[in-house]
Each structure stands twice: as structure tokens, then as C-alpha cells.
Image 1: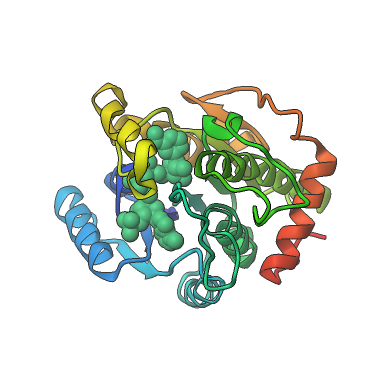
Image 2: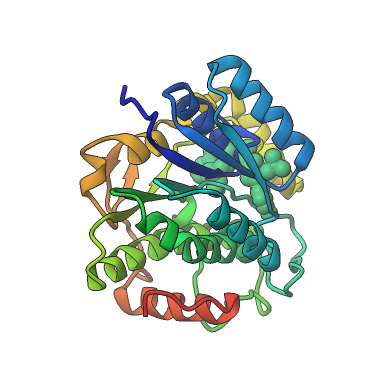
Amino acid sequence: MPDLRDKIILITGATSGIGKATAHALAGQGAHVILLARNRAKAARTRQEIIDATGNPHVDTALADLSVLQQVRDVAAEINAQYPRLDVLINNAGLMFGAAREVSADGYEMTLATNHLGPFLLTGLLLDLLRRSPAARVVNVASGAYRFSRPTLDDLQSVRSYHPLWEYGTTKLFNIMFTQELARRLRGHGIANVVANALHPGAVATGYGSQSGGWLALAAQLGRPFMLSPEKGAETSIFLATDARAGTVSGGYFAKKKAVPVNSRFNTPENARRLWELSEQLTGMPFLP
Ligand SMILES: NC(=O)c1ccc[n+]([C@@H]2O[C@H](COP(=O)([O-])OP(=O)(O)OC[C@H]3O[C@@H](n4cnc5c(N)ncnc54)[C@H](OP(=O)(O)O)[C@@H]3O)[C@@H](O)[C@H]2O)c1
């Protein structure tokens, strides 16, 4: 197990499921962990639980609802002011919404806002802080559910057609394409000290699916006894965040700690570039042009 005492690691969605297990394990290895959460009380409770269990006092909280762009800007400003560098950013928070299409405070479809636009903006705003690390990593928690997607760039807000499962799958494909494009752009800018990789954690017994209601929530609940524990589900995130070999790879998609192919005809460099540009416009955050 690597000694992480000199690492500052930010994890989003750290109050539950895979994110909480990831934060717990990384704090257990000595990292200075920042739990980014949307719920103040849950964040405080999780922080105390992790400190009590690991004996590591270096566990901080930062508050933001990732679907609200102004909250992402505010929390990024706080983090930029508070920390000398960031060694690892784990974009873990994500969820599937319900049968009825909802929009965020910024007027964007909720799944897109939470799972893709928030993390895109957060990553852009923290890039300079990551660049101050000698060897930084961005770890994006995607999902094998990218296969259940109907991606299109001309109805990004799913106004014409919305289904929670396709929407979730599409945003998870976007997580992978964002990772690959980020890696390409980092390379293109000659930034060698930041790598970016995405992953599928496996089917993990967490709160995942509970927000979607209806048969999707029921299916998630019924499947839970057959799923991985959150600790097991956190393993590939932890591998990409800490393993020495993983630090030499960028733009990969991993499952069970191994690089695996992405089987999607939509996943072309041209679509990834267009997705990046649309995300820049929607978040008002141009970076790595
Ligand atoms: N579980 C699986 O089988 C599975 C499979 C493939 C991929 N994944 C991916 O794994 C990641 C973690 O999911 P999980 O299974 O651990 O689910 P989870 O237990 O529901 O945890 C999701 C976390 O994201 C946070 N979150 C949700 N919306 C947010 C927002 N708007 N702003 C800030 N934080 C927000 C939640 O905060 P609260 O605690 O306040 O609710 C929670 O901490 C997700 O990206 C998911 O897509 C999961």
C-alpha cells in the first residue's frame, strides 16, 4: 500500500457509497483528504467517521451542489485559496434521475448538469492547482452503463427525448470522452505532470438508483445482494489515484484495475472535441484551447 502522507486528494460525492469508501481508504493510507459534498451535516458526519476510524486528522470538507455552476465556482475558489496544490481530483459524484426530466438551477437537464457539466467545470477550475503537483491525477468515475446511451450533440439537453437510463448512460459516456479529450489536450499543451483516466467501478451496492424511483430504483434495490461492496467498488478509483503504474497512463478507461476498450461508435475524437467545446460554452469555462 503506498504511503500517501504527502498527497492532497479531493473526492466528490464522498458522503456515500463508492466515494465514501474511496475517501476512507485514502485517508487510511495517510492522504490529506478533502470531501466535497452537497449536504453539510452529512459531510461533517462522514468527516468525523473517517477521522475516528483512521486516526488521520487531515480530513476536510468542502460544500457544493455540483449541478449548480455558481456553487462549483465558489467551492473551486475556496479550494484554490486554501491548498498549495492538488495531487488527485476524483470526480466520483454522479447519479441517475427520475422518469420526469428536471432542470438544474442553470436551466440544464439535471443528469447532464450533475454528472458532466459540474465535474467539467470543477476540473477546469482546479487545473492550475493540479499543475502545481509534481505528479497529479484526475480520476473520473464513469460506468459500463455508457453502453445504455443514445448520445447526440444536437439535443444535449434532451428536450426532444428523455429517458433516465439513456440519459445516465450518455453522461457516463461523456465522462469517458471528457477524460480522453482532457488527456489529449494536456499532451497537446505539453503538460506532462497531470494524467487523466476514467473507470467503471463494477456493479456496487450503494445508494445508486434510489433517486430514480419506479422500476429502475426497484431493480437497483433487488440487485443489491448480488453486487460488490462499496469498498470493493472503490478499488479501481484507488488504483488510478495511487498506483505507480497508473500514474504513467493517461486517457484510459479502466475496470477491475485494467485498461479496457470503450465500445461506442459515438466515441470519436471529433465528437469528443465538439462535446468539449459545447461544455465550455454551457459552463462558461474555456480551458486548454
Ligand atoms: N453503484 C454502482 O453500481 C455504480 C456503477 C457504475 C458507476 N457508478 C458511479 O459511481 C459513482 C458513485 O456512485 P455510488 O454508486 O457511490 O452512488 P451513491 O451512493 O448514490 O453516491 C453518490 C454520491 O454523489 C453525491 N452527489 C449526487 N449529486 C450530487 C450533487 N449534485 N452535488 C454534489 N454531490 C452529489 C451524493 O451526495 P449525497 O450523499 O448528498 O446524496 C453521494 O455522495 C457515480 O458517478 C456513479 O455513476 C456506480
